[in-house]
Image (spheres, helix red, strand yellow):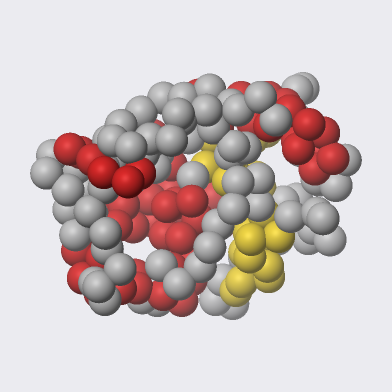
Length: 192
């Protein structure tokens, strides 16, 4: 399933957020996360090094999936900073249903960053990771927003990434063969 030229992006396991928006807030993993990770770990490539967001939920996911791998954190792989919305119950966050994707890309909660800002921050990290492929797949444990930013980067438009769902513990594979544009090999895959 995995190629030596794959950049494998995995969204962290279900987090224990208490039903609150958790972008930059640190949260551990939900109780059921360990069981879900056990089945996935058997299907993943063997790697010596894992890249992660500094978020606890990403580091815990990485250590469960690859307990012997060296973990390297990259600040650029953090989730979107939701500013004043951070930590609010989901029902207390403004409904974005009437906004176009272009409007959502530019929407910046007070004190936070927009999805466009996230794309600008994460894209250099994603390009760096893509450059490392070739000798084997490169794996990063990160967030839904960063996975969407990666899809936006490949598709050439920030609004494009917002069209994708990114479930916890899902795998998105980007093919990063030298000399050709990065392509999407799979999105939001999770074993049944």
